[in-house]
Image 1 (cartoon, rainbow, N blue to C red):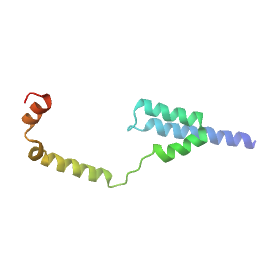
Image 2: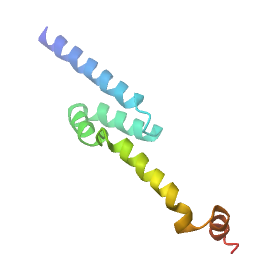
Image 3: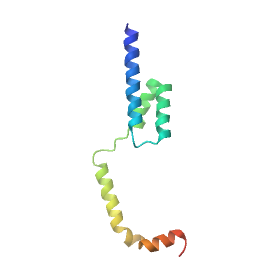
Image 4: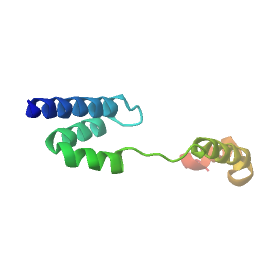
Length: 95
């Protein structure tokens, strides 16, 4: 009886963690497959490794700070790199 309960809990947790991995849109398909394989081959150790390295929490302000930096770069790009036409010609090797 206890074994049945433990196996059921194990199966439910494995399915829930697998669904979490599959629902992430920031991972590529091969990365999702790799995490699923790790979770199924090494169930307990794999979960521990996934919680340590698979879930990335950069903080609440990260997205806002990232957007501020990108906007500043866009504002200063012409002064540093020149016009879009000159930059395109330089990258293409035509200048």
